[in-house]
Each structure stands twice: as structure tokens, then as C-alpha cells.
Image (tube, helix red, strand yellow):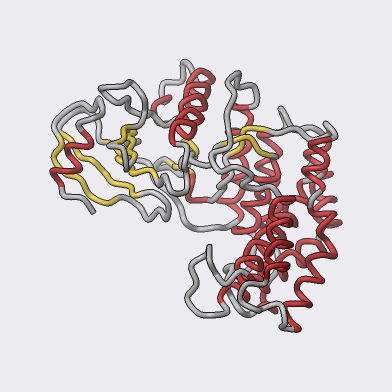
Length: 361
């Protein structure tokens, strides 16, 4: 971590008001370094080091965020609480851009939304709030005139993930394909590959549109006021064109499972229908203004797709010798794979139940 004076010097590159009094860590994000900047001016700020190892095109990243926040601000024009309902990024004094770089590291500053809180608890109430908030977020951006790009190319492209698994199997760099269990998992995943790749095919056929999606739909990526009302969606780095399945399926994979993604007790893995119904109800309520019939009827598919996709990614990494995901023990990625395969099967078995609920909305 940089010294206070170094961080103060970085903050001074931005058009902040007041003198900086204190800079300290904020939150527990895994990707970017996030700091709270206290000042004697009217505002406090959030200083972030953008992880350009993951987000390699920072210009595109901030272009997406700037376009989206500007469009949302236009939609909220006249709202007296507008500055608490959309993030405000501070321009760099020298360039006017919403990021600054010293040539190696990249930084940005946003205005701190005061008296706002994140929640970590996943229950039906918070899941309904999440569904409604992320659906409303997509709805506000459904008519954005700007062209946005993919901050992580092919992030949720199932055809690519399937191809990466085939390449891992063919190379077998550390000799793990000899295991009967590995062969059985591979056969199981291959059984569903064509079905799970249907989104890309539907897109090429012109049946399924791409939307501007958040692509990291977690309960803690929303800010709430003191009364528990959702203020705004935050953590916009993965904001990009994608299918609505990204926002729906990603939430269900993480929030809808009965156990964490690396729990070895696969017999305990199940999809929580109370979470599915709460999130789906909130999401459809706010997203119905733009959802096509095809998008709506395939929301249960999204709940299956994302554990399947994550199983493929964990499995490919295991076969490749654990080169991407951090592991805590030798079979960690295999355990994760078993878990996500079990969640996929649990979701797949509940598709009729999920479809019946979606049809009732």
C-alpha cells in the first residue's frame, strides 16, 4: 500500500474539493484497491486503483461507466436525491477524463454517497430488492444511444468456455484426464454442451438481443439508505453488452445455492426456490418494460446456464493444472467443479417449476 502522501498526491490529480485529511481502506473488494478519502470540504471521496491486469482497456472501462452514469442521470433528472441514486465520478484536472494514470497504475475518484450502506445477507427480501434494482438498472440503460464495449471480452460466452474446456482436455498438460472421475464429469458436461450454448446461437439468428448488463449481480453491489431502500447499483466495472441471462443467472448461481461454491458436501447442494421466486418477481417487475417474450421465457435457462458455465471453467482450470483460480489445496478446483455440477443438475430438475412461476408473473 502506498503512503498517505503518495495517495494524497494521486487524489490531487482529480478535481476534488477541500483539503485531504485522511485516507483509509474501504470495503473488502477482491479486484480493485478501494480507499475512503476524508476532506474538510463538502464531500468525501472514494479513491480506487483500477486493476488493469483484469480490465486491460481502462479507456473503454471508463467510457462505459461514464456513458451509463450520464444516461441514468438524465433519466433521473428532477429527482431531488439524484446524487445518491447514481455514482458521480470526478474528472482528472489535466485531461478531463474520469481516470488518471502514471503510466503503470490507473486510478479514479468518485464522490462518496453518504449515509449509504451495503448488505451482505441473502434472503428473500434482499433478493427481491436485488431483482428489482438490477432490472431497473437495465431498464434505464435499455435505450442508451452510446456504443459500449466488453470490458472483459467474451466474459459470459458459453461457446468460448466450452472450446476452452475441449482445448484443456486435448492438451491434458498435467495428466489429469486418466482419472475415471474426471472422465465421468467430462461426459456429463458434454451431454448438455449444445443446449447450454443456445444463447450464442439465438443471438446469431437475431432471436436474442444483447443489453447493457451489470454482469456482477450480487446483493452487496447495491447501496441502501438508512431505511433499507435501494439507492443505486454500484461496482460498474463489468458493465457491458451481454444477454439478460448474465444478470439473472449470475445472481441465482451465487445467491440461490444452499451452500458456498466450494463446499465439498455435494449432497447438500440445491437451488433455493424462495430466492429464485423473490429475485424473479423483483426483476420481472422492473425489467418488463423492455424484456422480450424470448428473454422472459428463458430466465429458468439462465439459472441453469451459470452453474454449468462455472463448472466448465473450474473443470478446465483443474485439467490445466490450476493456473487461473487460486486454490487452497490440490483438488480445490475439482471440488468446486463437483459442487457446480450438482447445482446445475438441481436447477435443471427445477426448470418446470421455475417456468411455471415465471409464467405466473
